[in-house]
Image (cartoon, rainbow, N blue to C red; front, side, top):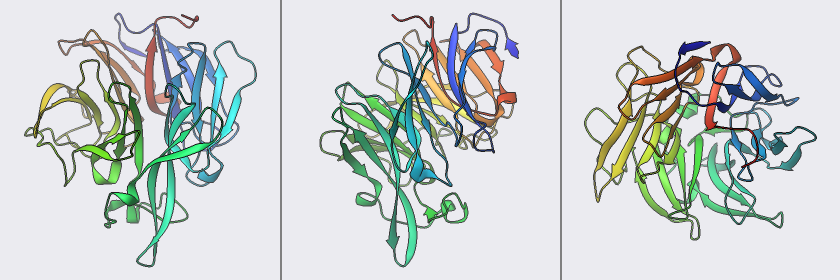
Length: 324
C-alpha cells in the first residue's frame, strides 16, 4: 500500500520473516509497492538479502534460530533459474559481499562460561577458494556479563549474549562494522588484524553521544557516503524507533542526521537505514512494515506499508533490474 506518493525508488529489494519457517521470502517491490520478483525458500527464515555486486544476482541468507547449524547462503540470478548454495553453519542475521573474497557473515558460537552455555558471535569470511577465515570473535574482546539475552530463549543451545544483528564492510578503511544488540554497541573491526578500531554506543563507547540520541538494541550499521556512521535505533527514542547518523570526532559523536517519525513506530525486530549520495535516505521499520524515503531536508518523499508481508528486513534500492 502506498502511503505517500512521490519519486520513490523504482525497485526496492527487501526480505521478510514470519513466525512460520518456510513462509519467509526475498522480494523486489516496485514504486507502487507491488511484488515484481520473489523467491521463497522451502525452510527457515530470510533475515537479509542484498543485490549482488555483479549486478545480475541477489545474495541472501536462509537460517533459523532452531536450526542455525544448517544455515546457507544462496545466490539467485535476477533472470531466474537454479540458485547456487553454500553451507554456512551457524550463520544468522547478515551476510555481505567483500571484494577479493566470496562473502563474510555473522556466525553464532557457543562456549561454556562459569558452568553456563553462552552464545556469542564472530565474523567469518568465505574465501574465493572455498575455505573460511575467522576475522573476529566477541569472546576475545568482551567480558561475558549477564543481560536481557539470558531470558530471551532465542537459541536452544545457550543463552543469547551478544545477538549480533548487522554487518557492513567499509572498503575505505578495510574494516567491518558489526552491531551487538544486547550490548547496545556498534564495533569497527580491522579486517586484516581482527582488532577493534573503535566502539560506538554501550557502556564502553569511545565516543560520547549527543543528549537524546543514545541508541539501544540497534540494527543495520553502515558507513554513509560522507563517512558518517548510520544505525537504525530500535529502542533508544522516547516514543519509537528512528534512523540516526553520526559524525565521529576524536572523542565525541555529533549528530549528522536523524529521522524520527511523528507516529509511534517502536520496532524491536530488524529495521534498516540506507543513506544515499544526494543526502536522501531509505528507512525500513521492521515489524511495522513502513518503508520510507526521506529527502535531505527531512521530509517524507515516498512511503509504502508492507506490513502484510511480515517483518521487513534490510532494504536496497535500484533504478533498474537490468545488468549495468
